[in-house]
Amino acid sequence: MRCVYILLIPSLLLLLAFPVSRGRYNDDFDDGEDLADFDDNDFAEFEDMNDDQAAEAETAPPPRVNPSTQPEEDEDEDEATVELEDGQDGFEDSETQDQDMYSKYDQEEFEGIGDMEKPGHSMKDPLIIHTVPAHLQNSWESYYMEILMVTGLLAYIMNYIIGKNKNSRLAQTWFNSHRELLESNFALVGDDGTSKEAVSTGKLNQENEHIYNLWCSGRVCCEGMLIQLKFLKRQDLLNVLARMMRPTCDQVQIKVTLNDEDMDTFVFAVGTKKAMARLQKEMQDLSEFCGEKPKSGAKFGLPDSLTILSEMGEVTDGVMDNKMVHYITNHADKIESIHFSDQFSGPKVMQEEGQPLKLPETKKTLLFTFNVPGMGNTSPKDMDSLLPLMNMVIYSIDKVKKLRLNREGKLKADRNRARVEENFLKQTHAQRQEAAQTRREEKKRAEKERIMNEEDPERQRRLEEAAQRREQKKIEKKQMKMKQIKVKAM
Image (cartoon, rainbow, N blue to C red; front, side):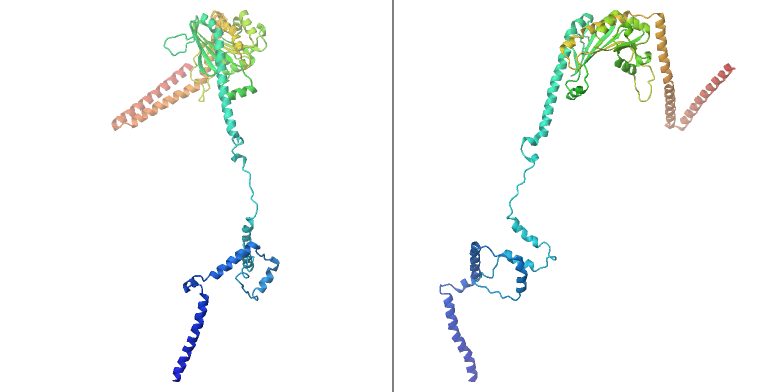
């Protein structure tokens, strides 16, 4: 029985305790909420605390921790007891908590922790607006290089058109003023060479924007006359700018080719001092037949600016008659050079491998070079002023045809030409010997190659023997010649 009482006592205590707990739970769920709802709202208490904290944060600023008091708080942190009331007093600002947490660590061990607070404060700094560079802005200043290039291109195109048209007008003006004189002295004026038969076109032939040609033929004692108008490169802007520093003038060059029987053997030239010195160095005939320095033309009444180069004094006296002196004196400012030669071959031939092995071909030629007045600022009136010089050209053709040297002058001219030819042969003798030796060696080499390429051994042997016999005969001939020379010497 005693054991039964001992078991009943705990059961009675449980029964007494059950109603009390039931009543307590009924008080908690008096709104009709079940136990499942209570389990779902386990964190409702914390949510209320967060709502109250957010409302308090809007009304009052978050507390700041003074750095001077931070060490004291760190010392009392272990002894202090934290009590939470309504979930508000124990929650401080997150920024303050981060600062307290980082202050526990050694600043030297954890580098960069103090810099983590800077981004939060940098958001409050004012915005800095930088100015856009000039080359990135959409303004006219950004395209100054393109503007300069387009302006330069337009200036070049306009100068090209203006310069080309001016040269064309000057050439046409010259032709209009000289056309009547040319047609009265030549049967053909203006042949362009495109047709098989010679046809007079009656117009200039344009070689390029600053050079115009005119071919005339069909006259006594004259194969033909080539007139070349060499204007300045007015269509080239760079050339125009260069002429501002060094002015030059337009030129008219006339080349008359005579028949072989219509000119005697002499070389003569007259012109400015600078032109004569240059031609004597560059032209083959003047350098060989007029070796003396240019002489003054004061004897014939020429201006001091003109000098004379002549093969012999008889030629100078024959060419410089009164009419010729009149033409040259009245138009000395327009005359660059006048060159008469029966040995004209052009400028000296400069070859890298040495002197030419034969004399250049020569032509009996009259050359005239006239300067157009104006020094680049040429007008149509300046082109018309060249008409008297064309009359001088026609007169010179007739004058040269009539000029004949006397017997002594003819012999002297022939000796001069023989001397020039002999000097030329002496200069080229070594080169001719070297060329002959080279040809002999090439011939021997070709013969040896032909023998080596022979497939038949017997035929190859016969060819070698024949070559040796030929060499032996050449040696014997040389020995015979040497013996004959010795006998004659004795």
